[in-house]
Each structure stands twice: as structure tokens, then as C-alpha cells.
Length: 85
Image 1: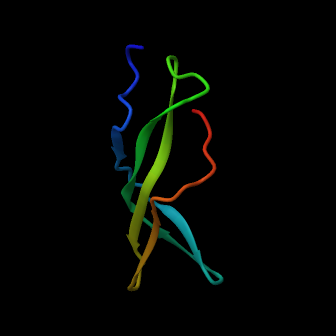
Image 2: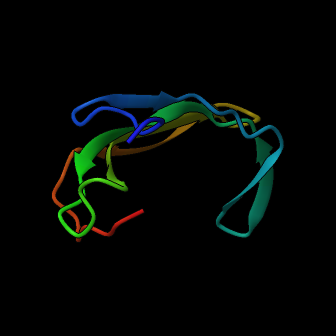
Image 3: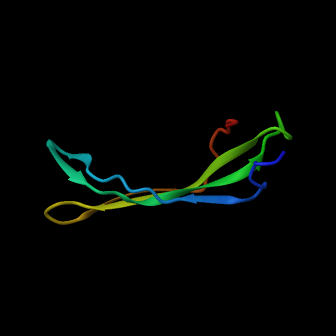
């Protein structure tokens, strides 16, 4: 079907979330997480000609904390419960 990405393609996304509130203990600070995530295109056995599945295969965001230090959120490739998109 035209318009669908090819099976096996990896699609990177690089967002930034300026001014995100982060609670550390009882304090809340504003941080600007930068980083991204990546999806891999997989076949959808329930509808192989009309849709694909997207699987999250990586995620990493880091932000500097005002006053010193950094915070990092990271997830590596794993086998989650799969759902069709």
C-alpha cells in the first residue's frame, strides 16, 4: 500500500520539551529535556496489506537541573506487549 513505511525501517524523533516541571523531593524545578526516541516498523499480521506496527526500540532524554546535576530517562530495546497502530 502506498504511503506506508517499509518493514524494518527505523524512524527517529528528536523532540525537546522546554519548561517541563520536574519534582525532586518536595521541590519542583523547570527543565528542558532533550533527546529522542526511535520506532521500528514491523509487519502487522492482523492487516498485512493495510497497516504496519511501530515498536519503540529506544528512548533517551537528558536535562540539566538548575543548581547543578542532570537527570536522564532511558529505555533500551525490549519485547513489550505489541499493539497495532
